[in-house]
Length: 208
Image (cartoon, one colour):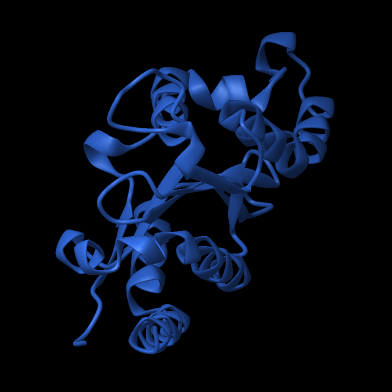
C-alpha cells in the first residue's frame, strides 16, 4: 500500500490570529458557518469544545488568566492601568490571541482510493489530539474540529499558548513567541504517536 503522508501547519504571519475578526473568520471556516454546495455541516465533527469557537477561546482566557488578572489589578494605583478583560485587551494589541494547528493524514490521491474509510478518521484524530494535549500542556486547546467534507480528512485545532512567568506583568499570560510556534510545529511533525496511528490505519485499510 505504500506510506501515508501527513502534514502539520501552525498559524503564523498571514495566517496568524491577531484580531477578533480573524478569529471569527477561523470559526466561520472551521464550523462551516456559511452556505456552500461544496461543503457540508453534516460532515464536520467537533471533537473538543462547542459550536461556538469564539466563546471557547474566551472560556480558556477566563480559566487561565482571570486569577492572575485580579492580582495584577489589585496592584494598580491608577485606574487606567487596570485591565478589565484580558481577551479584549490582547485582541486590541494586534498580537497573536490564539493559534491554529492543522493536521492532515493522507493526501488527495490516497483518499481517492479509500474514500469510504474517511469516517474512521474521527477516532484517529481524537487520539492524536489527546496525545498533543499531554505533550504540549502550555498550548491550551479551546476547540478542535475534524473535516470529512474535503478531499482529505484533516483536523483544525485552535488554542491559546500560555506561559507561566511571575516576572511578567501578569503571572500567566498569552504568549505566542517564535519558540513556542516552533515547538508546536516540530512536535506535530515528529510525533511518534502520529506515525503509530498512521501504521494502525494502514493495517486496517490493508485488511479491508
